Amino acid sequence: MREVRYLPHYTYEDYKNWQGDWELIEGIPVALASPKYIHQRTLTRLASVLEEALEECDKCDVVVELDYIVSHDTILRPDVSVLCEKVDDYILKAPSIVFEVVSESTAERDEGVKKDIYEREGVKYYVLLYPEKRIAKIYRNTERGYLKLKDVDTGKLVLELNECGIEIDFSKVWI
Image 1 (tube, rainbow, N blue to C red):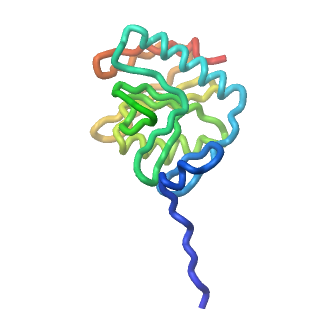
Image 2: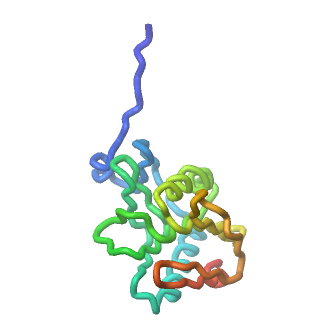
Image 3: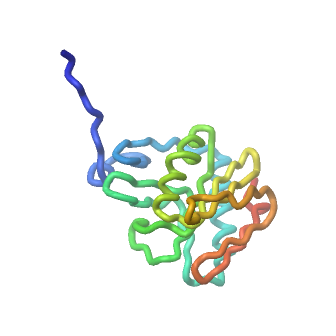
């Protein structure tokens, strides 16, 4: 009879000692690919647009690629997050908005498992950006889970946060 072997189940204690860029999803390590130019430029422009949009809001901040420790065995690294609560070193509570810049290598994870985790954890808005297509898909968390608000190409979109509204001009995001 063959011996049954199980895959290891990693935790935050393991994760914090790893070299390189990783996410940990329900105990399974996922290596993050080296981003391409279009991904990084979109991310940079988006962060700049968000910073400008939140200039009058002293309750919320924009962070780029900051670990979100969901649980002892799940750590995600959103491309951009809008946080409306105090944060020390890492994100410990659901961000108000998570933005993921989607590439061919990340599409399945961004559109599936990460979306499910963000929904379950109570992230109010989830925005998937597709830089090659110049389109963003915006979801809002409701009692029934994420509902798609709309797709935006070069238009403006207003999202309501705690005490602030944020207007995102997507024409300034795409390169």
